[in-house]
View 1: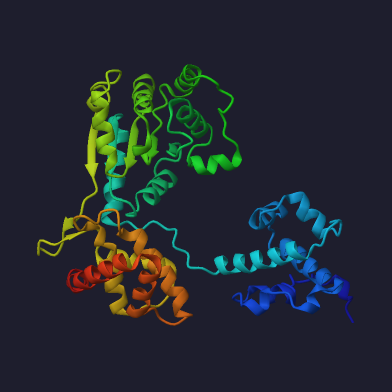
View 2 (view 1 turned 90 degrees about the vertical axis):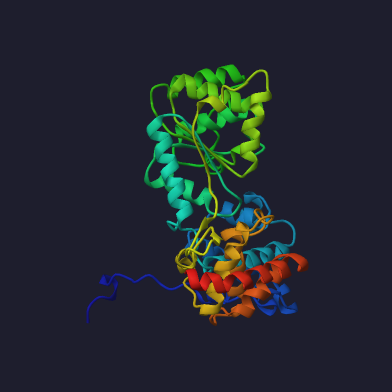
Length: 397
């Protein structure tokens, strides 16, 4: 008989206690019964968590953040060094692991579909890069601007500097620090850079940060993309214009409709005047277009919405698909520009998938999901508008 030790051992499946955690969390599965308060049950829970960390290669620090404690505390609990009762922490850990499994099995939707909106964004960014000027892209919330920009950086401009403007980088010094961080880590958004350390944080003065940015970027021709640019202050717009002049780097400003007004107001600022507006080589607004020759205006066709839904890998009825495509176009209606759009429609689909329990998603499930996500009056209005549009979407798509 051959020596059993010569055989390579196959990778073992997760231990049975982990399988228990992969099931959809039911209260009776997550709660500890009176028997679970005994030392043996605490020992078992500790082993379950440790095995999960090892098998799925999740760091102890990540799990600690999931349950809101320090890594050292979690280490003490798992190492049986915790001085207090470890049961509450282990209870939280098991609940967090169950939630991790649910998210892991959730629909994957983070892919960019080349809708008309996405194609227009690609065209404008490429034009701005070619002309080495400043360009603006304006569109309502939730139509895929940020997703498309991230895809552009990954596919067309891997050396681009991408800054997502938030309260932490709206002012000149913080903005220049974000530019410097992007120069060191091209292709990463400011959010991603924050996880790895914000290079340039040591620079204390705006003039020093500006000179350092010019020194690093002058003559490079690297594309600078500013997402959510409507949040920039007037002073930061002026610094951005000066950075463009000093380096020759093309700049794409992407944002919601208030961006146009923010740029126009810089003309009335004595320190800026028309210098920023005069350097804009292309201005593009992502607007609904006529579809089907009927004069109706659409942001997305039914085919485009179906292509986006393909990322969910779920079944849905034809009626549900037409209604959801109509809901995505509610943003195209006057007065509703910030109320709907594709992002909201996808949220409705996510909730409907949860409601469906694995069955094909139906129109009634979508309507129920819509009512859960919005106030009753808005939900009724959106449902009515989507119903009116659905017949047209079916004809157009």
